[in-house]
Amino acid sequence: MTRGRPREEGIDVAVREAVRALLTESGYQRCTIDAVAVRAGVGKAAVYRRWRSKAELVFAAVIHPEELEAPEDTGSLRGDVAAVLEVIESSLDSAELRQALPSLLADVRADPVLEARFGEVFLERERGYLVLMLDRAVARGELSRRPDPALVHAMLLGPVLTWLHLFTEPLPSIGLAASLASPLHAAVVALGA
Image (cartoon, rainbow, N blue to C red; front, top):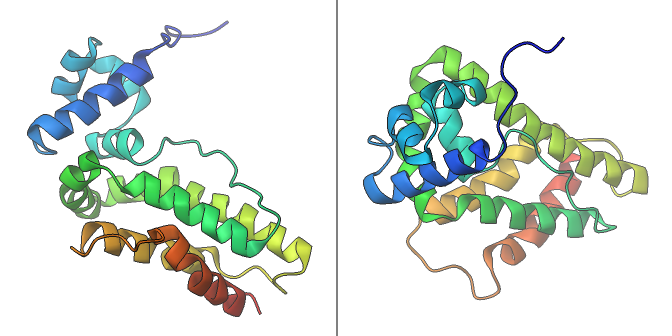
């Protein structure tokens, strides 16, 4: 016997669209669960059944959902690093995220329970995603061992996040992911030697 109401189709999409619209129109501080629920035409309880906090909801709506598809297998670690960098860049390059990121990170850091939940829901899954890429490289003989996924995560995420959210220079002419792929591939290889 199933307990509770079944999830209604379309609520997730409506809520995510409402979050993105509210962030663009009024910023992170005014993007409340109440405002999202009204904008999406759903009850507040429906939002809380899916996401435990505003920070979790905003992250899922503008960066990536809780579940991640497996990373692309390009046949080489260098190609896989480039593909992952493209995914990171596309996830972090939005007007909504520019609005939300400083306050979102502050909210996560200010609440130990939220920080732990954020790590469990998003960071652990991102690292699991990278483990798939790294284990393929080990199986192909491109790495002698799997490097620490946390180090690889920081190495790939850091430069993209910095360029998109701290620097004011335009993107490199060949693209950010393409510019970073070779040096970051070399760094991953060095960690897995």
